[in-house]
Length: 291
Length: 317
Image (cartoon, rainbow over the protein chains, first blue to last red):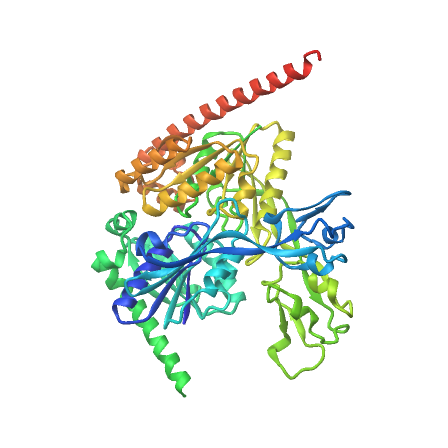
């Protein structure tokens, strides 16, 4: 089962929750994978500290022009909708950062002068953190497009009962890429105007993609403002699976790179119900398959 | 004209709260919310929209049902898995394909290779962008439709429009609230800016992400300044960030302590410098002065550079 941990707003606790859940699930005997899909700013490894078993470059196929065959007819630059090929009278130049690797230029070239070669855009790392399988992608600095790197992470996922995909913030194409093919979404949100505003955007996205969702409310305080916020969450019509109390000790443990559920029992207790629900869903699915 | 871009690498470190305070302190400036995937600045600046326009970003493929013969060539060639069997009824022999707009990148390969010429690229309205009058100046902001691509394009569009507007109005400071990460919208926000202000937090991930976004600034040739927010959380980590910052040539500007007044201000829909004179508010004011000093210096440097170029050009051959 693939669960995406998403939020809309950044810094609401996606990685804290995802690494803690992976820890709790593994401690409960589940076969769990943590996959870092925030390839622009991947942080999961700082907490899980996995032993990397293998790594390889993440590559994107980009066109390379055979200068002996190319007669600079300009057809490739005409068909490229991304402006990644410029055809000059004596030279044809590829701007590979702009290339979406659609293959259109190769198909269009009448002289068969275009071939695709892989170009590294990041690194894929696969390993283990205790009993947790770890898959993480890191986008090279200066590369603009993260979806191909996210795809590489998803293609390297091992067989597991439970796969937790740690999503990037926002609602743009990297988040869409992470969500594609998932079974459900777990939103981590916080009781602030920004948290609420961005959560609504993220909810709209998962509705468009027809994915089931649940909420983990983080940094909740016992104030009237937070009660009002709770009412809003209820109106959003998405089940709230857990409320995590605001706690400075959690923030301090996080700052040191500790898996919060491992070192703060109260936090683990509050998150345990999420773990139980995930376990139940997996069992249900297993029964469904047997039938 | 000067443009300061506030970025962070890691999300949720306080970019938007700080940008709002800087906007209020700077009196007359044009503010740009470039976090178009999760824009929040309008929640603090009380904008009154004076103009708005749809944003036409990219194009997406569209299959004319009447012309499609169902040969499946488009599906074979599409590398983004964007051509789906309609309703997934596999038995259908003809007219059975549709485009998944969330997966389509608008490359046009299907259009160019459809034997029936049944596919066309149609412009997509990806969102709207707004010009608003706010407390002490103007705000350029946008709302991107969920799941849309082209956030980089929209960012570039917003920055260009804001800078033209500022020139006309005689305003000399652009203040940009950037997106998290290091990808396409961040590159679009930073390219050609005068100065980047990196706001981070004293955590392992704050440090890690700070270093990545700082290297992006160096690659793009944008000088950077560093601020650590919620600094009292982990003083050891503050020191490590400061060291890393100085090593890479980014001036370490200072810290902002954790202060509940920041969230209180956010709930009230204001910036912290308007509602509080607490520790966070005082630090932000000090940081504001330091930034302005830095911007003035870089302006001088820039002008003297221009002067030297003019001198060279003006000199006899």
